[in-house]
Length: 357
Image (cartoon, rainbow, N blue to C red; front, side, top):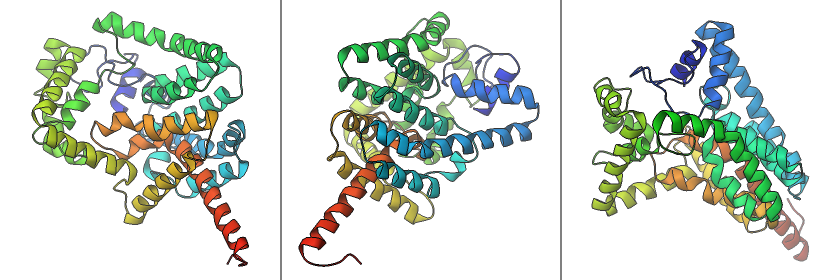
């Protein structure tokens, strides 16, 4: 991300961020490198740029959690659920080093997701579609969340929101087609991620893979650069995708084991100290309980965040930052589950003639 921001600040648009070639790249979504690069163009110094990006990360992370009571009301939920979930997110952040330092786009994606869902629930359809489009240009992996939501909307509103969102991202899709001769959703690197996650040396997490196999295939490796230059970025990634799919077919048990490990790490992240991972798992379980109590649009939002969104990340190497974009929605659903569980306990104790401790 930092290399991409440097290129943007130098007026090179989104050229290859691996120092492998000077050609165009789509390995990153354009939104965050443009923001990062604009800040660096103004500050002119790396240290100052990172301080400003850290401040931006703190602001957007705080807003994402502060808006949960607003989102709860918009979805027809108890404001108390939003207040509880907002405080949990604020006091027990998923990844403090990410949410307060700004090296990656995940906190901004989380904020845009909260705002987009709120406007979709009660707001102009055009504004909702525009917000979703902007969100996709920063975090394209939010697409499954919107797909789950539009199913619960009246069809006219769903078509308008989806249409405006698509129009918003069309210039970037057209740019990619012009440079690479193929259509793909915002980013080009899925084949790379699949190859890094499915091979004889693959491990379930990114940190393990970096030493085991990632560098051998990654364009950041100078020995890979000649192949990338010869075929082009997208063609190289497509070749890696075919290699990964062939490996999966040849090693179904090993692929299934890696997938199971990645699912576990998604819901029980390997955080330090250990109890933070257990807390994340407990909140996830509470969120699934809360999901059973939701109806209508609120249920569609939670299904998108808890069920549809993680599917892509079950198939690629695990990294705790991947969960951050939907963490506010997960916490809101967990808040619903927590209030429901407390209400059941209170009702049970009253029936049994006991007072709550």
